[in-house]
Image 1 (tube, rainbow, N blue to C red):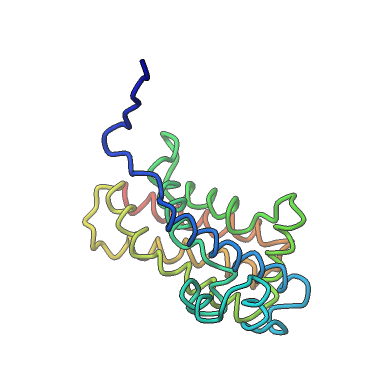
Image 2: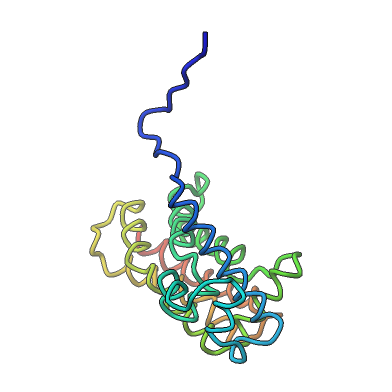
Length: 205
């Protein structure tokens, strides 16, 4: 007798063949783009070259990636999920600014030990178009972060202090790197969050 396995309630169905094919095409395009960008530089690689390397048409490429910058920076949903989880799932006793500082140090400034990741970070930070696009996409999480901060603090969802903390927390890594360079950015970021934590504690006491 064959045992029938049932999925837990609420479990989304596995992706179908069409979805898997679309995901594979998307990954092939992104991988081809990153390889060419790392080899020759972002500005010296054209969309047609990327499409040819991935064996797709330019029309197909733009269906998956509407702008060139998105070929490199396309983890917006995943980044927001990690950011909000840093606040919601912080250890007991850890303040919201401290949780956001730890997230920034780990995910926004960390160079990592993987040479490929370091090369990717250098590509983004040394290319103005990518650097500006990354910051623009990152700041799109401000409203969602402000709502989570308010919820975790027992404050109204439209409290301007929550919006201010969210904006400052998201802006701090870029400001620290721009003002102090990669070597001193971690110290500068920690200093900035010390100020945020002191002010937030006084506000919510």
